[in-house]
Image (cartoon, rainbow, N blue to C red):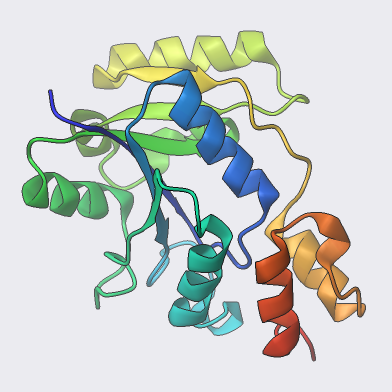
Length: 203
């Protein structure tokens, strides 16, 4: 096998320390060579009219990971005109980089409805799944779900145990809407400055 690459997709609207810490934990716990952050393009699950423009979200990701040599911005989804389904993104990446081994990073809460994603069987063929576990989650239930998905999809799934940070992008957007300039210290300083400079998340 070639390099081990973590794939971390999301709207990143905005990216915050929770995202960075999960990626860092995945990198260290599973000996990854790099983690690629992939801002969502045309999301199948979110109202795009309410999302910040893709290029702006990508710029915030770039600022957040600046200076971390094993983190990389990948614009494969925002450069695509189609809907950003995970199975399509992983298929494209595997075709572009057949020698690399991909590890798809996701929240463990998404395991509960993973069967409802588009072509979960393809996702499981293209990547190892790393599920980020929060402190408030039932570990027994998570391990039971992982065992079920392993059997159903012949999936390789492992938990990410570190990187727990109680923060959400929606809460940060609300904080900026209230006039909190730094986002409560829950996102990188350069990202907070970018948000302030460009007057993002205001009425």
